[in-house]
Amino acid sequence: MRKETKIAIFTILIVALAIWGYKFLKGFNVLSKSLNVYAKYQRVDGLRISTPIMINGLQVGLVSDIFQSPEDPKTITVEMHLDSDTRVPKTATAAILSDGPMGGSHIDLIFEGMCNGPDCVADGEFLKGTTKGLLASMVTPEEVRLYVDQLNGGLKDMLDTLSDRLKNSEEINKSVEDVRVTMANLRSTTDRLDKMMANSAGSVERSIANVESITKNLKESNQQIKNILANAEDLTNDLKQADVQNLVSESKVTMQKLQSTLANSDKAIADLSDLLKSLKSGDGALPMLLNDKEFANNLSVTIKNVDLLLRDIRLHPERYRRVLSKKKMEYEYDSTEKDPAFQNKN
Image 1 (cartoon, helix red, strand yellow):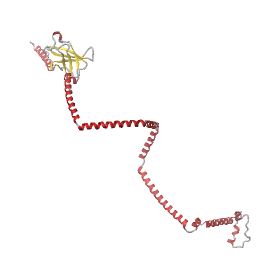
Image 2 (cartoon, one colour):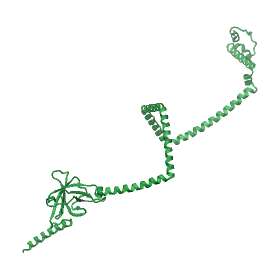
Image 3 (tube, helix red, strand yellow):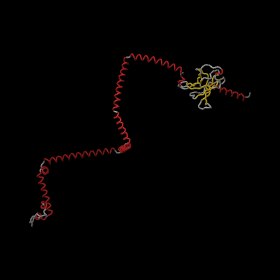
Image 4 (tube, helix red, strand yellow):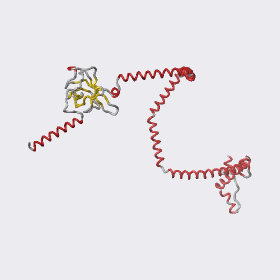
């Protein structure tokens, strides 16, 4: 045998051994006879190739392939590789069950009774496929029913014991009576409140109408309120940007000047008060002018005569030249119509 032939035969054996080892590691024995059946599902969450196939907890095969059905892409077809000696009725159901909250799943073949010959599923045939949730996968309906019956029995015993203790407890009976009285008082209070609300329904309606009117006015004045807020914001910004320190300093200076002015005013008022007191009760011309009516009349006549004298000096200055020249007056005083005193008499 040639060397090249030996190498080719060795390569073929190595490849075949590798394929067999790969399949064997995945759970498939290509050297043993198997039964290939199929099932269709709408969902195959958690199902993978090499997922075990069980009958009452006994592994009888593996999932060999998962693909979309050619006639309906939304339907998933699962190929199951069963042991050759497995007998499954054609009416069996291939249910996908969850292994637990951590994930994972397996296929459980569910059926009733036994099958013989043509009643058993053959190679290439389809089984009915179904998917169960986590709770249905963990417990069966019979187990749930058993748990519920046990729970009902325990609750019944507990409630009976609690009822007996409640009947024989004076404190609880007293508390129940207090609650009954409280409910009666609450019912009476509720009735009174209903009557009060019925009597004040008109006032409540008017109040609601007033509130609606106020709300309407506020809504109509919304733009004005916005303008006021905008003006307030502008004023705040102006105050913020202003030199507050200088304003405070100027305000202090102004207050000091104002205090000085007030002090001077107080002093002037005090002086004026003293002057008025002296005028009212003191001696001299001004108090006599204010208090003595005769003196005031005489002073008025004197001022009038002085005025007449000045007017006469202005109109007839020649009458008074004698005072300056010391000459004898060539004429006598004559009261004529040009005399201011004469005109005043008329």
